[in-house]
Image (cartoon, rainbow, N blue to C red; front, side):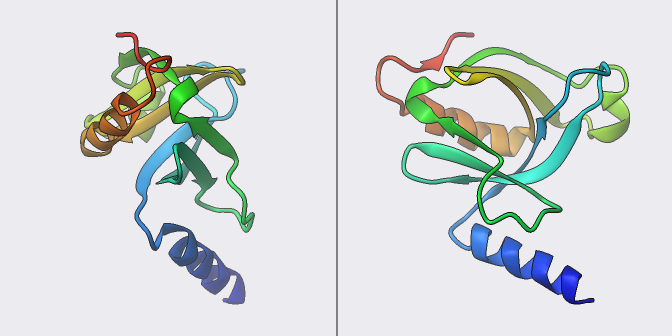
Length: 127
């Protein structure tokens, strides 16, 4: 019971200034699999992603606004349709640290795109 309380307390502390629910694909070994649920927090020009079911106080992934470019956008495909509702969009984002796939609802996507478009001239959208 204490473990569950700790997870809720962690989430409360990390999301108190606002967060979006999103998933990040951590493994691409099996097509359509490897997604982990979590939440993103915008903080000083960076989107920090925290795993939902983790005790870690630090983000697992951080996307820098000025260095992130969206390469493509799509609806969930194949096995992903069993995990995500139809309102989810999957984005392929390129950063200097590599390529990341993120999935979020259309309402969260609107906020993410607005945040990304406010980037300095060298980053942003390439759709």
